[in-house]
Image (cartoon, rainbow, N blue to C red):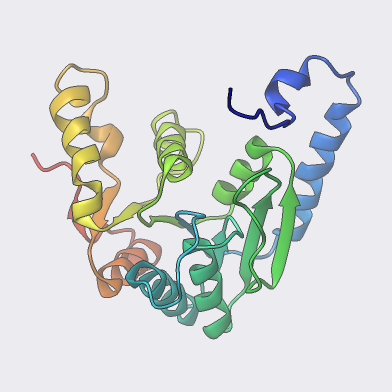
Length: 232
């Protein structure tokens, strides 16, 4: 039999501990709100925590997007880990902007990168997710894995249910996102589980210039740039 690793399954354990855990959760919210109170305008850049070499095309692109947005006056928020997140934080530092890393304590993968001016460590995913969303004026989704998909869907649900203001969710790399978008259109939308309005803020961009212009147009003019994810 394969060797079993011993982890604390946090959600499962939540009901087994007393209510004092709630004070730790409240403390994480308070720390996050106080540390991030003056970072706006900001853009949150999502992407994989898997290691990328600095010469990898996705690393280079994420760094350049963050650098260009930083030069336009945006703080850059990431999940604070390696890979794409490191690249974006590095670009923010180059652009002399606030570079925020919102780290999560995990048994595997996640470790803080060295390119942040504000670094917070969270135990609870749901607190961290609030901080990634609350201060952003736009969301940039680089190609990523399950965490990136989860964060994309959560952003869409929050906008769909009017829990947050509608902001553009920019998907970087049309080839990478095509399968998901085709499924949303041809299966989920076709059977009536969503409406086209639910996804009207999704924009697909393939170049750094397109991403930066899409954010700029929305922030300064309230207009959406880039290609609509779901064409009529």
